[in-house]
Image (cartoon, rainbow, N blue to C red; front, side, top):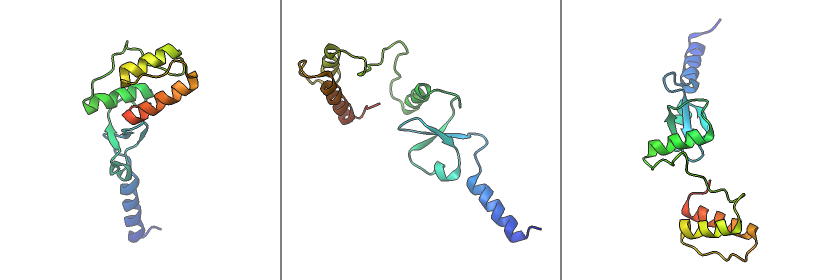
Length: 127
């Protein structure tokens, strides 16, 4: 038999851990991970209400975040620069166009990749 105090405690716990019915998901603004929309996470400054598809891929969620933040969306046909597959010439050219830095093309490709990662981290667009 449940007492009134136990019933009140259960109701308080349900209110504390219940997921929002209208908007059940929150999205992390930095990495796009999706979490349940519960009061404790709702207060966190890095989470926003997610109205996209729960089955969206990471790329789709990142595009949704960009569309909500007012940043210009990336063109769907624009190729994404992958430093893991880029040649030395492509990395040197990318550094010049994106960051205005001239890299030494005689460096080993791993050193060039490390330098590109450092430049991206300084610019705040490290994926």
